[in-house]
Image 1 (cartoon, rainbow, N blue to C red):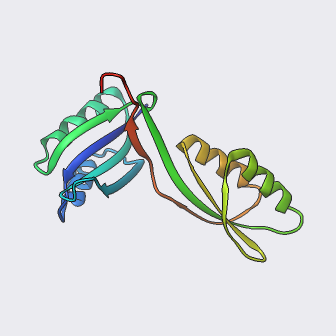
Image 2 (cartoon, rainbow, N blue to C red):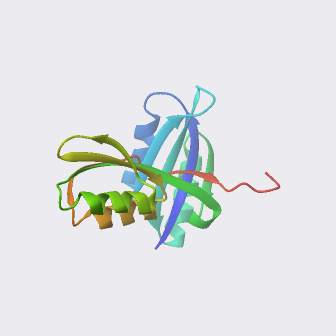
Length: 162
């Protein structure tokens, strides 16, 4: 199974997200992550879709996206050819016994503490999907209360011929 990131420029109007999601649904392609936002042009949005499959599936996804009328341009990235980031907020319950451990994990992984109360901390990490998963694994033994993740955003790496 290969994972691919599709950066899809689309016309910014209602119904486009539904059409793209419908394409994945009808063809039984899985969406691992989906993020949509405006670009510097308010008439154009960028959809960042992470999907996985065999080589044929990966090629078919790109071909089918290019056939959509609302799609302006499709770029396909392998994980090694782009910079990918995800934002996560995680709320953990802490006490006098695990507070130090949480603080050490935060320092080690460059995690920000963005809110705190007597019994809860809210942590923020913007990093690669792999580092996000690692943080969740490290916090698993601690009481995770709630997690919110953005999904993956990606741009191709800077090249001299760009």
